Amino acid sequence: MRRVVITGLGMVSPLGADVDTTWQRILEGRSGASRISTFEVDDLPCQIACTVPRGDGSDGTFDADRFMEPKEQRKVDDFIVFAVAAAQQALDDAGWHPETYDEQIRSGVMIGSGIGGLGGIVDAAYVLRDKGPRRISPFFIPGRLINLASGHVSIRHGLRGPNHSVVTACSTGSHAIGDASRLIMLGDADVMVAGGAESPVCRISVAGFSACRALSTGFNDRPTEGSRPYDRDRDGFVMGEGAGVVVLEELEHALRAARRSMPKSSATACRATPTTSPPPPRTATAPTAA
Amino acid sequence: MSDIAERVKKIVIDNLGADPEKVTMEASFIEDLGADSLDTVELVMAFEEEFGCEIPDDAADTIQTVGDAVNYLTKATA
Image (cartoon, rainbow over all chains, first blue to last red; front, side, top):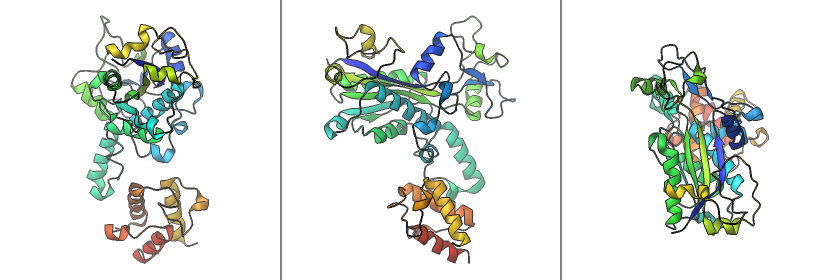
């Protein structure tokens, strides 16, 4: 069986717009939760969420313009923007920028999303109701489709191999990494860009998850204390947004590629190390057990 | 440049993120300004919104350049 290793990481999270910042702030025990300020929440049972800090890129803020032209951002929901940004980071981290057709056809993408562009669907529904069908944008559908996170990453980086996406709620990202690993094991691809992306923080989403009693409601006055899995006082989850993407490679492919320049961060233990020998430790092959 | 041409030019620059220098009357949305086919659909919708008119699909298909849009809208709003 072909072995799979992780050679690149990318992340946009409520704690920071890159892997290193996010990891550092996790180690510091910081929370990404805060009171929702982008829409009316006074009549919602849950009023807190973890949102990506937008900004100019300084101090871990997310500057989408660094990853996607403003004109392209307008056409898609944020989960696609987050996916594009995290994938760019991961591919840069891995140093994998396929140029030949043979390299491109062996490189694929599998980035999933649990719920996709819910906010954009709501906005379009209002346009349909208030202005009629002729005012629905031609980008309404392609900007909301879950598989277009993978699609945009494929287009931007010339990844012509398998292009899939996963929709399995909270385990979407993990399943994507597992399934993408199996594509490499089975020989369908040598490299897969895999992970999950989400931008569900909108009024209908909070209302819907509240209605099925899934969200934390007892910490509206203490947002950073709301997410407490396994705790005696837990009372639901705290919704978040962002994207996490890894580059998976077939082991021999990664070792051959070790000659290429690979900028390395030191953010995680779950990283393949093709620039070193002996072979990567077991943690580096975690996807094989996913 | 006429008022209509100025308004068309502004919409093209905003929608396509085009370099204002390149938005000439002769400029083709797809060939010169980087639009794809869906961009041109949205562009026509923006013209309809700005000028308060309805541009039928067969007419929209003939609007390929900035000048085409200006000419069509000049007649449509006359």
